[in-house]
Image 1 (cartoon, rainbow, N blue to C red):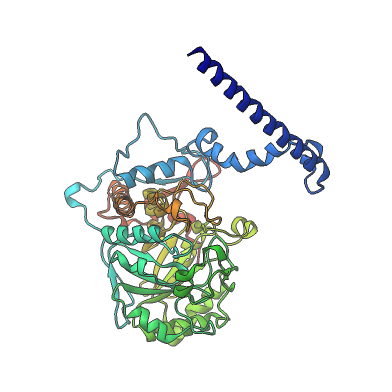
Image 2: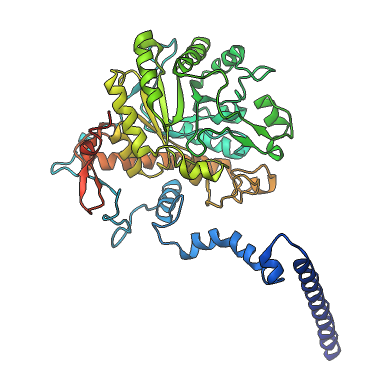
Length: 493
């Protein structure tokens, strides 16, 4: 026995010496590589030790997320918001104890004005039906307030799209295909579909990359496809097209999009055939005539004089020529990857663009004709209710539903290394995403958004969230005191 112990000690000692030798050799190699390279001053001046800077820089966002950031500090979504989404998706307790971590003194804080005579449970109503495309051959009527925003197959994995499709069907809401075309996985769950036409016309293009009316008719032949959305611009990258890395463009994605396999897929930064507001109406008419279904456009609002021209042109041509909806994307919208100067500094946030467009529609007598869809970081009930009070008819969210799928805000969307299997085509990582379980979580999340928005509405004395108006909301100003929302936006004409 003692011989065995001594033998084991000798083996472990030898292994330790070998390991130590490897470590020393590695340090020596790193040392000479660092002092001889000329690209990184830190590594040249502090060989070996300087390498830890880059390691901690990469890990910083994870340490902040779990250890250092307060509940309301983190960006783009704080812990309080993400935690609510996770709890709603899992259908567990969503109540909080002791007091809110939301400060009511911060400029911009939204406060809903409760009524002395709140709506009783037996008086509460489901959201009313809204019809889009009344002049179309096939209008679309729905009562869903909250829907799945555009996320492409390719940017998202196969199981993620399948889970969203099945979850949207369970929730009774629509899902937007994003600009990557219509895949079998969008259709699989049976949900209502909005087909998005991006600047590259993926899924609806001919061999030259132009919009194909024949392809549009094929897409519209699917009963599930309820509407078509012309994507003019996106909040996270206004004025720039999308890019899908070639490593994500497998044979299936290439076929669905109509592009070469294995090559970076880059969208133009605008539609070549759209140069002015009249061109928008012409393309909408082309799509609507080919499909017979409601057609609108999506844009992040910056300069807005063109909207005046657009609305005047609609009244000149006739009410039937109007887009059936406008999706307004906030400048703080998200995406898998975007240039930081555009993401940080271009476009108007929703708090300015949404009331601006709504007021302009009212000015031109088009508010009832054109429905408004709001998009941009609206992932909790209070923000959805706020958007409805500002004038939105519907709200859509991409990242909220990604959180419901299990997204941990790892910031790996563009690297094909998403640890939750949502934005990667690595089959090993995709295994962690159970479609049936995540579909139910998507449905749960959607249900509790509707429930929470209704809860706020009832507190304000109206019977459903769609009845919320600007007079029900106040916004904290720099003085620390609040102003009514209708007063703040009364000059947004």
